[in-house]
Image (tube, rainbow, N blue to C red; front, side):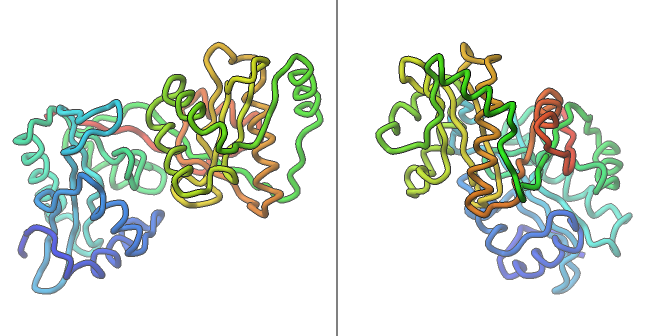
Length: 312
């Protein structure tokens, strides 16, 4: 067996082995290239394979930021294990542990004080460990000193035949009576939208909107809420990774929360998706409070993830 840095001559084998190991998260070569090889921070020295002759046995890669990510900057004390998998027929021989320890050592030498599993923004494949679908991953990483933390949920909803609930219609009428408006985005709101998102909801939200504006899809994908002064106080979009079914983010200005604006916006957006023939909506992750909120609007948990980290 040989352990060496990843080479693209093993690309097709890597994709094939990924799909045999990470069976709940199949990928194609373009997704692999886009989210791994073409990520700004991809470092070939942190990507490793184990092989026997020309047969690929395992693959793993980690990340240490070389370019700042929005307001998070370089996060100098953080490192990530983006993915690691071993051929099922070759497990139990220490191959995965060897790759993991190799990357941890490199990250430590680069200044990382801790390592996070998955959850690397903006190009993560996994939002943590899905213990329901990969129980062996929990055992493996816990045996190597990783500790579980918060739980997150992916949720979704069938939009066939969706109708805006009567209670939402009534709530919208009440809000509009006192001056709020729910309007489609147009480019006359572009700069105000970007300022609102950065100020109220964070630079990551601004980034998602900016990409959509640049691609010319914003008018089809965004809805706004205007307050009685005609200022933006709420926003929602879909398709942040190009998948029209992917919903969110959705957010309301802090001073305007608890008025029911978010609930109205959510139901209106579900209708907008349904009338465009997008009959399924989902999002990747929310916390426990978010799970309860979305459940009240008919969304169901698709899968759950647990944060796992290790101090080096």
